[in-house]
Length: 399
Image: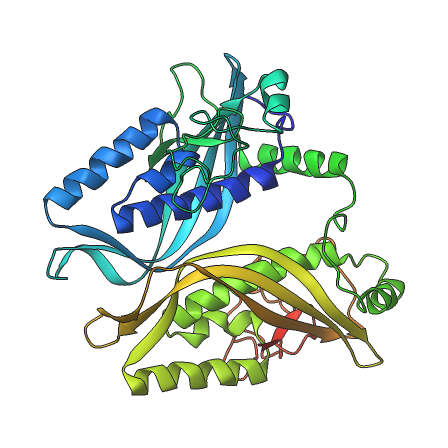
């Protein structure tokens, strides 16, 4: 068991896992395992290839609607035999199901769901191998390595297996009791893992380093920081990212109530109207294979009444159109396209950052009870209005 900071960046590893999950899911849906070979070990990829092939022989196919990777948590890590190994827990949401050649449901559900998978990722720990990976080349033709969306070398069109210098998926399961060899129990307690990640983050520098800030926002950010010395825009970026994903799930499920605790009153009214319009139309547009490329600070403002932060979320997804009566796909395709969403967050000017308050704690910031927000934006327990930025950042507008 390792109790210290891991010898790699947990955030970067989480990004690799998100990308890998979506590639593997897409390979299963399209019944084309080659594009996933770049993110899997040979053994794991062969298992995927056989599973996809067997499903195709049966005339069945895998489907996902509104798929998102909502969280990636590092459970444990190990370094031995010249390799790094990491155990990750992926929290996933959306609809997943299997249909036959005629589109009839075989297993799973077309309704929204959430599930958890444990994935094992490995890579070389040899510094020389990692250094050599700075300029990788195709093992088939020797050209500088550039892999396209199909998992093929852009020059010779050969299938390119994943390099051992990169993190590769080596195991996937709904539940993992002992993912490594006997005697190597690597599950670390959540408290120890948080301590390790915090230590790694401290070594990496201030949290605002690397947060993209567009021209024109810096002055207002400085004004907010002058009024609130504990404020760091980098601390709000994860809140914006999670709000984007949670709002997507509320839209996929046509359940605006899921978003009520973190959206302002006017935006909540818009979400209710969007859900009602979809039900009336009888069909619903949902993003498939949704992933986030980056979150940028696009603007900021500070005045005597409120502070505002505007984020641009650069995302990628395909578009599926779902018939609400049958749950079947009636439009869209599986082509991944980039798009941008604009999220505006506000809080009252007098609010100050509380480093000890977890905005994801699920408790009312006014009374401490379990957070249940009524349609009018008030806590069901104490009646305090909590969705106007009175206690912290709230999502006020989505564009």
